[in-house]
Image 1 (tube, rainbow, N blue to C red):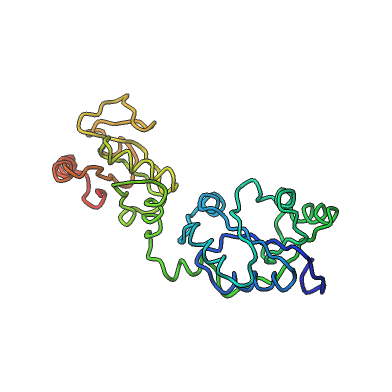
Image 2: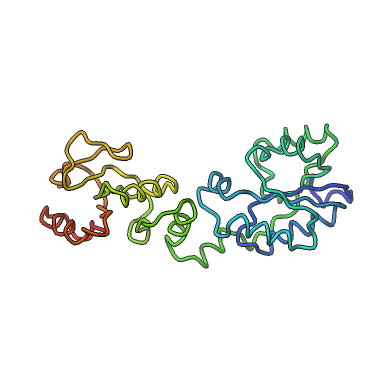
Length: 261
């Protein structure tokens, strides 16, 4: 039901969200929810869950997002929203709320009608508030974050990496060959896999030979890097000690300089 269609007041209300880069739209939702219930429980999505749903990591980590929500006078209790309570019926089984509050941007979600019907049968309500259309976390990210900065930041958060992939020099979705099968190459590969940033078509190293495999991906001898032997957009050098030496080898193979990172 739309909140504007009823003046009902519930005992226990529940609202859940990412609440990343907290803005007025978030505040409106939480404030309106508290106006319609005696006790407001707010769920905050984990970093991993946000990435799974939106394919990008939150700018503000979970602990800080929880601290922000806890500081609001409208909030009575904060919990971590885990995957098992994303479905509203599962959330009701665990939390037994009288009303689930959300923005009306979710009204067209396919499962909404069946969930609302079942919640009503259980004595609970699904209540929609008007969505604040002039601001969103995505729009704030576009305005405030430089291109590709978020990937580098998220790579630091998902693991203790000493070497961060050069996200500022490679476009998302490009096909890359990583030159280096040591610790740097391993860290680059794991960051790209976790962030789904671009495709690694092959690894190479000075002594690589056909049939070698690294991190589950084929290796190629350096001489095979000449096109049209293989299609790729960039060669990323994964070495701190031998960068200049590898660069000279690639130039000797007539690899265009703008394809080498």
